[in-house]
Length: 553
Image (tube, rainbow, N blue to C red; front, side, top):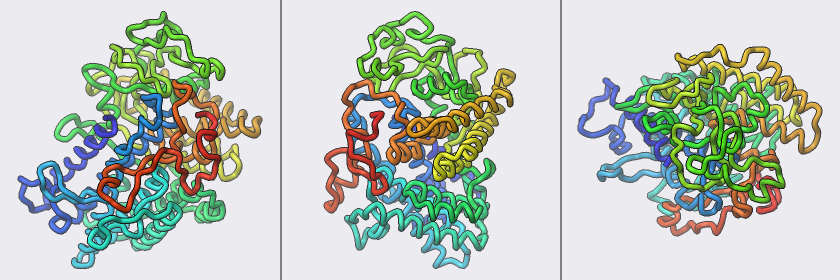
C-alpha cells in the first residue's frame, strides 16, 4: 500500500507539470500520459521516463529499507512478505507499454519511451540529444537495480516486442556491462552540452555538467558493488563525480496538497487528520538514540515523550508487546523486543501485530527526508500542513554515499569516513529550515556534531575485524535513511552490520538474496519460469548461501 501511494504521489506531481504546459497543442479531454509514443511530445515522453524512474526508486528504496531495518518490515516470514507481485510495477515501468484503465494506448516503460525519443530525433530537425542522454542514464541505472533485486534482467531482447514478444533474461553480469555501455553513450551526448529544448529536468534543471558527474558516479556505484577497484580508482582520479552536496542526485517534492498532490509520499501517510500511519524502525531509532546522533531530531518526530514498556507503564491497548516476555532469540542477543525509550514509539523487524489506536502516539517521519516536523521536544500531534508541508526529497545518490564508498574501497579509511558523516549531517541539518514553526535552538550545535563525529571516527580507528565493519556499516545505514537500495546491496555483499535486530520469528525463512521474478511477466512470458524461493544470489554476491548468510538473519 505504501509503495502504491508513493507511485501515485509522483504521478500527480508530473501530471501537474503536464497540465501546466502551455506550448503543447492537444485535445485537453485526453491526458498527455494517455498518448501513444508516436503521438506524444518529446518533452512529455521525457517526463514519462522521469515518472517511471522516480516511481521505481521509491519502490526499491522501500524494499531495501525494510530488509535492512532502516524501515520497519511487517510480517514474520520473508517468502510470504514478498510474493511474485512485489516488483510487478518496477518491471512494467521499466519495460512495458500497454493500455490504461480506460483502454487508451499508453507508453509507460522507460525502454519504450527512450526508443520513441530516438525515433523523434531521427525524424526531426530538432536535436533531442539531451532527452536521449537523460533517458539512457536513467535506463542504465534501472538495469543495474533490476539485476540487484532479481539477479537477471532483459537486455539483448528488450525493447523489440515485434521480434521478441517473449524476451529471454540475460545474466546479471551481462546486464551490468550493458548498463555501463549505455552510460558511455549518454556521456558522449552530454559532453556536447545539448540544449534541453524546453524539457523539464526534475533532477538537474538541464545542466549537462551535473549529469556527467552522475554518470561517473553511477560507474562508481557499479564498481563498488562488483569490487572493481581499478575501475573505481580511475573514476576517482578523474575527479568528475558527485563530490558535493550541491550535486546530490535526488527527486524533489513540493508542498501542494491538491490538484496535484506534490508532497513526499511518507508525509502524505503520516501527516493526516487521523494521525500517523507509518511505523518507524526500532533498530534505527535505538541506535541513533544511544549514539546521541545529531540527525535523530530531523529523521523522527515524537508525538509523546515516553514509550510503554520502556519508560512508561506497559499498555496492552496501545502497545500490546509492552506486556510480552521477549522470545529467547531476542534475550540471547540483548536486542530490544518492543519499546525504545524517550517516546521513540516504533516497531521491531517482523512485528505483525494488529494496528492499535496509537496514531497520535507513534513516532512520525521527520523533516528529513520527508518534509515533516523537526523534533524540538514539543510533543504535539501531527496533522495536515505541519512542519515542512511535505517538501522533502527521495534521496538516490548523495555525496555522503560516495565518501562511504571511497572509505570502503580503502579498508574503511577513517578520514573519508569522517567526510561522509560531515556531509550527511550538513545536508540533514539544512532541512530544519523547512519547519518554520520549529524551535531550532534545540538543534545540535557545531560542538555536539563534532563530538559525535569524533566519537565515531575514534571508535572506527580503535576497532578491528568485524567490529570495525559493524561501526562502518551502522553509520552507513543511518546515512542511507530514505534510500535502502544501497543498504540492501552492502548487506548482501558484506554481511555487515551483524548487530541488526533479528526477525520477531525465530525462523523467518532465508533472507531474500533476490526477489521473485515479476508475476505479471511470468504469466505472459513462456520463456520465463518463476523461482522457487528467494535464495538465488546476484553474480556479485559471492558469500555463503542462505540461511547461513547474512549472520544477523
